[in-house]
Length: 318
Length: 299
Image (cartoon, rainbow over all chains, first blue to last red; front, side, top):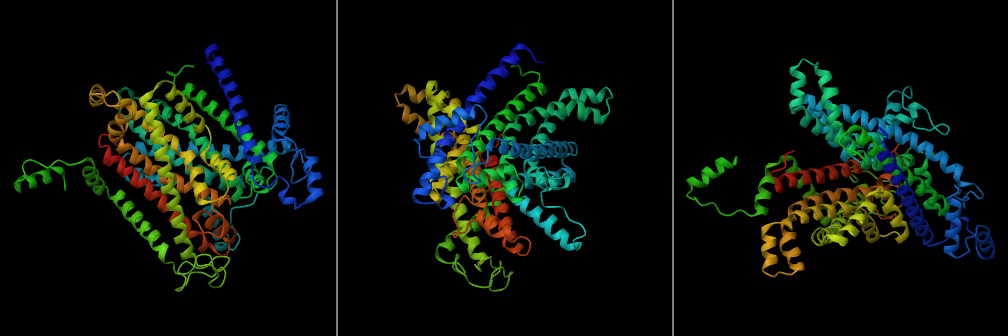
């Protein structure tokens, strides 16, 4: 599996990834530093007090000097301190938030693939029956209705109406306790993200399965008496998964954007919530740190997808 | 009516030599047969009409106190009032205008940028192609909405800036499509004939390659509109898009609707449904156009 060629390929990709992350964080660094107003705009300081604060954070230095100190600290894993919650070191904060976002995104990814592939397979096996029509329509709804609309509807149905209907006796918790929440608290936000992406997975899986089920080797497998579920799972699905894996890269980007918005709706203490808050608060250091981490996360996810792609499709060799 | 009966009728009517049908008329005829796409077209036409009407008339001024805050739907205010006592119907109408403007504006910008870059990359090949393709891949490797967010906070809040920021994140699909089309069209005999008769590069690109890839370009542009509307709604939903008090679907949902969801869901629900149906309609129209302009491709 891990031949020399594969290792060289991974090494190349890691170098490229590091370069991309560097480039992205540099672009974002200069972008936020060109914002109108300064980092302490929300502190409502003026005159000498403002100058003194700016000096304390080194914000009165030329941008290039600030950039150099940012880069030289960032490669050592130090993203500086927050300007708004003064003196709060950012690195531990964003690492913890990254783990929360990964928890939510991971759950959404599991729902995406699990639900999407099962729906696609069932629709393809029951091709042109009412089962197929219902599932296909649901999939279309899934991938056109935006995740934040699904999330607000979930909020309304499970959080408000269900509680009113049962007089508060039964409702999904729409809060988030502690850092990582509970499984019940995780389920509604994760489904809100996952439904949107699983619609696309279902569509691709269905099309691929329909194509594969027509192939000669499936007929051969059936003819030699392989049981139907074994034909579908072992012979058809394994080949139908190749196009599904190929869209996982863009899907992961969609899931990450979904995570950003859903965290803001359900007040989940993850990277997405921090990202929007830091932009609105002009907390430059956090914005840059969050964006750098997101870029790294997307890069790693894409690398993972490409490796899975090679594992699923033996024709691909790196 | 099937094509066979149509031909038979025309034959009976004495029209033996059928008139030449242009790509557009053929496409329109196919589109009309697709009921889903036709329904989508009618809905979008209605929405466009509403947008035009909004220029001249809304039931109430969209950003002015006209009644009790959070009042539910009534005869005077069919969609109720929001937290500042503003009429929701008027706000949804203005919101529709903004969403459609952003959608169409982004599609225009993305078509101009994507088609030019795609033509250049596909026709000239060589280093031009490498530069453009690398740019496409770099832009692809990032979630569009996060990129739009950064672009947008840098260039500041206004509807034109939103359009520019979103366009910069949706042109890649168009460029890649046109590049692929151009690569195949530039090898056709009629392009070779034009080149042999001394036509200049610019003329071949605009006069031969571009018209022959118009079908896929239009289909792709139809898909750009909903994704631009979605991105704009997303930004406004998070509070970093169209600045209030100007209403738009995203900030109606995020700024007005979400905080009041427990006791006044009427602020949020109609807009959520309207946004979803609009996105659905554009996608159905895109699918219909794709089937109409490219009959070889089966769904």
